[in-house]
Amino acid sequence: MSEQKDFYVHPTAIVDDGVTIGAKTKIWHFAHVLPGTTIGERCVLSQNVMVGPDVVVGNGCKIQNNVSLYKGVILADDVFCGPSCVFTNVLTPRAFVERKNEFGPTPVGKGATIGANATIVCGHSLGEYCMVAAGAVVTKDVPAFALVAGVPARRIGWVSHDGDVLGADLVCPRSGRRYQEIEGNLLEIKA
Image 1 (tube, rainbow, N blue to C red):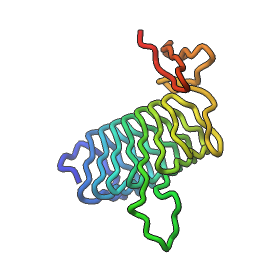
Image 2: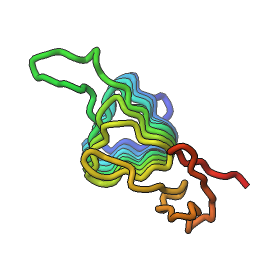
Image 3: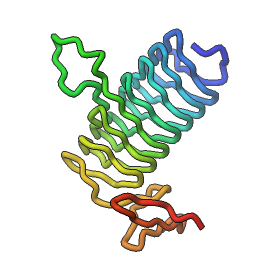
Image 4: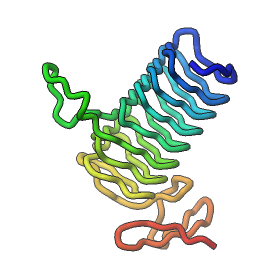
């Protein structure tokens, strides 16, 4: 575990050797952080969270109860993982076939939100500030700022940097930020 002690680990949590934990991070009840994992600053790992081995969690991430982040998952800064969301790590698992060399990479972009009970099938990326609805099953890449829902998940709209659903004018009702859709992607218009 990290030499520094400017983070909190609940007495029931387990943090294995070879883990790096950033300042002001909190690891709560019954969480387990496995070797080779890096947790950024100001993160919250809630009850029953399992991370690792060899997982990277950026700064400011919030991982809610009952989430497991397996090898291959990379969370950028400010990612929200809702309660009981699921990341798979192998496309065709069998209990009796060893497939640890087939773990699929699953990068999650800055500021992305994954709703409660959503499933992210490994090998797909989630773009910056996208939002995956509760219960959705992601089976392909999700573009930045996309709002996806359903089984399988499909884009049903766009969300802003602040997480508000955008109307036809593509202006965030909270911040006033403006966006433009170009070839199926949403880009923020810098003032």
